Length: 365
Image (cartoon, rainbow, N blue to C red; front, side, top):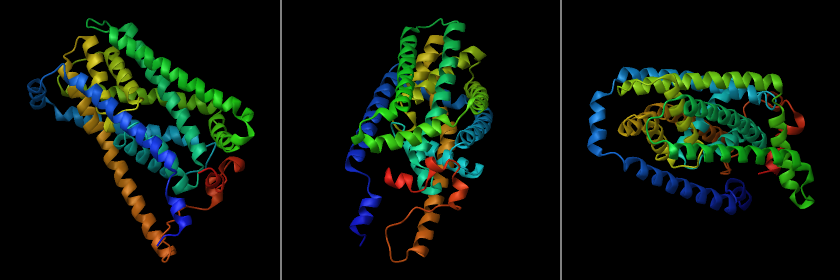
């Protein structure tokens, strides 16, 4: 039987489990509520009538373009991690695909935490430092999303009802701004925390180092990559809209892409069920497009774009877990407490010694 120490190693703290569970339940309830509002404006017969007219050639093209967009995201995260950990591009790509897949499967965007934890377990990168790079990545996404949304709102002719859409975008922008300000405050004020919160201060030190490691040159490159990601995602969305017979201009696509991406930043049900349909219905209604096509486009996005990443990422995760289990059985034949497998030696994964020490995150679990 596993020892008491082993059980403490593999089991998360009860408070963490409770917090994650509550967050997941809230995300599912929130997503299902939005789904009810979205499908309440359409009929199942209308949705069924869209399916026979789908041009699957455009769907395949959208998947191909979206795959290129994901590859650019890998390059961007590799750039962000460059100042904190010396990881090969393949390792970064593996972690990103798995993290995105888990994000699509679990509610409330818990995949972000999983991605950071996966880097720690698999490549000995401190969780707090990995989270720092993920925060920078999502901040860049937020800037892109808000820019696209504002461009679409101000430059597009909105013949439909768009008051609710404007309110949602304003609330989203306010929420994202609050999160970014909060993160900045934590980084700036981390040295002023009370002594009894030393454990938190140590984590924030690793987090801050990862954030601040992205200098002006790094940030410029990542911003350019983010613009490219936005362009590729826009082309993918344009292809999906064409697959259901909808001709949309660039400004309309920018609005749909921006609002859709903004909805994925919210805690939601697995696969962004509900939140994405609601966002598409709002943007399609504001643009004067049939809302039934909005529900169809959102569902196509979930099944074929997000689904593509989910299938590949979960396949990689299953393969990784199988290799880890096989390695642990051969190294620890009599010990059921499976230790994390590290690839390469410590020198291959560390570039900032004080930030990336392998033992640091064992103290910060």
